[in-house]
Length: 207
Image 1: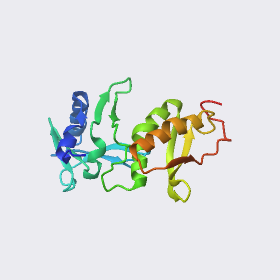
Image 2: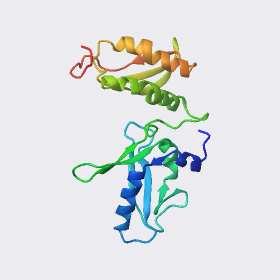
Image 3: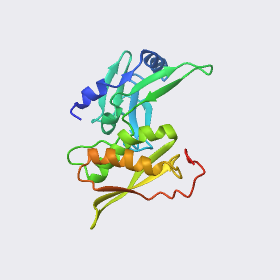
């Protein structure tokens, strides 16, 4: 990613309704200079979760990227910056008052570079290009391992889960979808194999 941290944070949006809610919430804390700190737990993984916490004056970290809003500052954790590009923080009113919502499309996508390992590059393609499609069938796929096979060459071992486990269409999905996409993005990859136990069909999308 070529964006500087400041540019990346500028691509993160806190909507007007969310800003108004935060101003009111922070004013009640009676603490001069208080703001919020925004970060991602388990970034670049399926378990990624966007978080926000109070940040009183002096609690901010030197490496945090500061973004000033009307009435309060927001400090973005430096390590989370690239995972919050295009993120939207909104406030939705409901009968109970309302709640903040996070939409961060890049939070679960591994952050890769030219120095990334083969495993990291495969995980990136799985998370960014393949799993969003499988999610429509309540499925997912993850990388188990990579190894050099004497006969076939560089091999990636995948494991399907959710609605893909036990699915009768998984062979077609693997060959026509997953393997084709992975090889297009990673030319040195020779083959893809599936280690999932498809005898377990309880949650399968197609039986």
